[in-house]
Image (cartoon, rainbow, N blue to C red; front, side):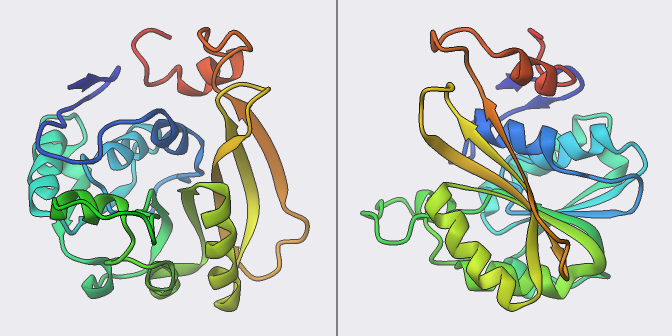
Length: 232
């Protein structure tokens, strides 16, 4: 169980647990004002609930293919103050149909050639066999408004692969946040915002989670997560 300031995430039935980089995505991505928002692969419902807190008038749909995670997300949403504005749907995104969205975000599975687990739920959460990047990009292209934004979290190499697929559909990265454990460590995750058309030069920022000692949270990280973390 992970308690945030305005909601609680139970995660005993899901493979993918609350992690720091996902919380950064939920805090950093532009969720707009009002409008329709879509969370692809919601898992516990974490990102949908973070968006509901940040955008108090948005209507949010959260899609999850795994049955156990779907039920866990429903419970987490129903126990939150945002239950009336968040709908959880049990479906592969390739089969999901709805009116276009103003914002779409995803923390997708990204392993491709790694040793697979005998647990199908683990494979679904970590390996992109059921949601390859081509299918993810195609779904975003189909479901995103022309003026909308798509936000995604991936390791650096996988982000470069996704950018290649996205640009073929007219989705181009315009803003990027490189995550490091501390300033001396290599980038381990990248958050990117995409939009249709040519948005000019993209903006790139960096965030170190910890100070150089590797134990104290950085001031920038504390400021970003302050609306959510109980100890900030």
